[in-house]
Length: 460
Image 1: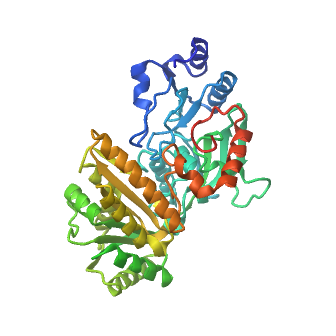
Image 2: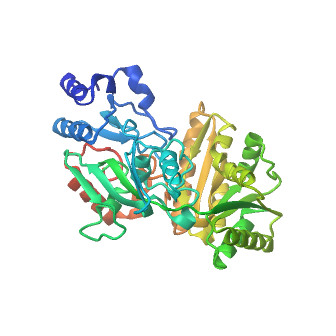
Image 3: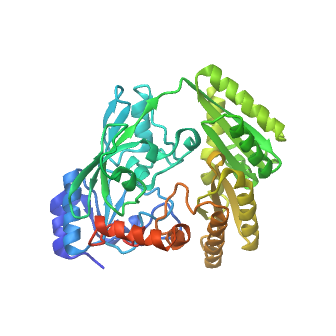
């Protein structure tokens, strides 16, 4: 339904008429994010430029019980930014400044609409590293990264986004502006609201500023690749590497389907006769990196690798990393729709989980390629289907329901880094149980008594 004309007029007075879109053709592109099979248009799209504007919009929405969904670049993969109940889509991309990079305190302050790559580049210009490295880093925003606790290729060695969030400025649904945490690595005063808000997917508050920890930039980095006949062998190599005390900066895998798709797409010279590819890398001091890559290569060979290659130069290393980063676009060329999911299992059960995924794919007559973060047990099974075939979509939903159940059976979880959103909400109770679900709803009600913020998601 359309917004009340009075509400629409107030929105225009808050952010300016040119920053409010409400006509059908204007809001239609914002009906979905990067998640296929989910679509629902907002009644209005609002682009604030300042914290005070966000607060005014939320006060207005709470007063009139209008749903509000915060959004960054829309690269989300769990339908967390789809406005299921219409209302206001609050797009924060105008708030895109990097406010400060402190070399003395090893931190960066930024507005939520700054892209991950922009923040990383601002840090790198001062010789510092912003470690979180999601695959969508060139388009995803740091506000969205915090809201979903994004992971990435460096998660094994460096952790995920929550490990780097020092402080937040957040507007509550009722319009209050709070600052959690700050510029300190140590601060245990009160409840850790910073951690609670990190990963809350825009259901508790709207992030308007982030303070993120930085690290010294490693002096060098390099990458290697090992090919195996099966993912089971690659999984044993992962176990061997970690058991020998090596913690790689990168430890990624592609299955046979992904290897073929990537090679056809990028022509990187990958071995398409292999059943699995393991990408391993490290960063730090040159002698340590060389020693660790050599040792990882040896351990892969000991576990039956068909071939092991270590990059000789930066360009070759970047090409190997590109093989992992382009897995999704490569798979998307195989049909008209890709449905990318993520589940996580304990590392020793990685190969078993892949076997379960392959069995599910065969049972539902689906092409599913699997790639992911071998070092932390995070898999991305990706179904490639014909968007014009409703039966294929139904089989895909059924297949992923079985995949989520299998992950839980193996002591894993239904999402490691993409989030819950609307896509995983039907499976959240299986992961959390009744008591934790009830507590989640009470937390949501404490932050958002009117229930206007991202309804139909976590806590609803």
